[in-house]
Amino acid sequence: MTFPTLSFEQIRDGMLRDILNQNPQAAVGADSDFRLRANSTAGAIEGLYQALGWTARQIFPDTADEDQMLQHAAKYGIYKKAATAATGALKFSGVPGSTINAGVEGKALDGNSYVTTAAGVIGTDGMLLLDATAATPGFAGNQASGTSLTLTQTPAGVSSTATIVAMASGTDIESSSAILARLLDRLRHPPAGGNKYDYRRWALEVPGVTSAWCYPLRRGMGKVDVAILSNGLPATRVLQNTVQAYLETVNPAGGDCQVSTPALVVVDVVAQVTLAAGVSLAAVIEAVRSVVSAYIAGLAPGATVLRGRILAAITDVPGVTDVTLVSPTASVVTRVDAANIEMAALGLVNLYV
Image 1 (tube, rainbow, N blue to C red):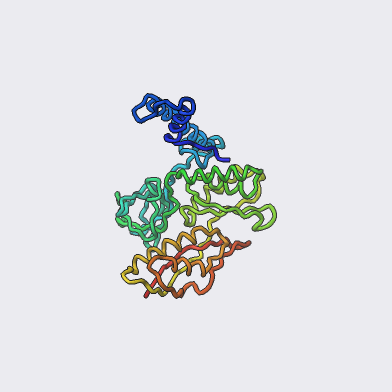
Image 2 (cartoon, rainbow, N blue to C red):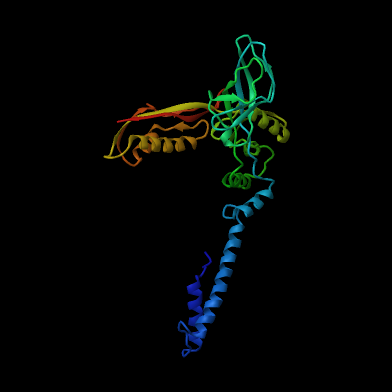
């Protein structure tokens, strides 16, 4: 039964009613002494109700204020994960035999800087790939392949520009909602000596990992596979190695544990639409991309992307009166088996009238 929390007016009126019950001749008008005393007392009691309500909310982590929720999490050794720097590789060009040392910095047009973490010599083809990392931790350090960089100090015999081959797995400091999700997962699935929930929780403890799944026995008896993502995208090899090393320190059985990242099965959405008068096709495309992306992002590896759900999502977009879905032509199946860990990802969204 819910405990009734009275409002200020209910508390005050109840006090005045009790006074009149005791003394029907009592003056309880707006300017009476009884009304003034009831107002001040009711205000204090209402404050106590609010304090008790706040205290009750702090008992449960999913209703507690952020600072109190973090204290709940700390009891289980769960703390906010720090921001991580994006990692990847840079492609350099120049005179064969020219040396590029670790610490060479390149800047993108958006102001982000990237620094090599290894040294190398430009090959006979005039090219060199070197591992690199973003100079500043955070999601903003992620860059698309092909992004051009300008070197701040150009080594002898090397071109003053470089190209990002890959730069991913940079994450911001963990959000309150994310750490709450980890805490609730810990409460719902207490440590069990190394079951699939333990491996998933351990993987999510590593900064940079935003999603994780565990597949016991996928490759046979005594074998455990963990798949991870960073910001909804495949994790870099550096992050996979970091998770692998961490799991080997907490794996109680010391068994065969393998960390990987799911292979993406790209789902292109092409449809002919009929729009209501005055509705912009560009706005509809953005709305469709948003709703379909949210649907696909909520699917785990091995899930099937239902063609009917995509059709329904497009149909439900305001301004769309009719839809002919051209692609996909059928539901898209992803696989999780001994040889594959696949998950769907939204690709091209092309609508036309």
